[in-house]
Image (cartoon, rainbow, N blue to C red; front, side, top):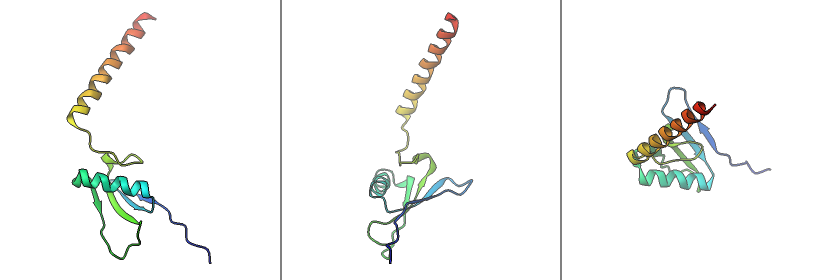
Length: 99
């Protein structure tokens, strides 16, 4: 009998603010656990002793998941991104004036 393929499944309910993850992927599982460790309010991990080793069932807030878990943006990074955007806008205005 062929062995069942172990897949990663991501679920999102429209209007919900989290992505449900059922994963066998070691890298994804490690990233979610690391995110949970650093920022406990961004991820939820189901702890069940009946699950097989290497399997992770979790939920990650949408703002912290972009096909890979990311930590929440700090105020410092938000300000830096805003400044970069303002500089870029000035660049575009300058280019339009030359034409």
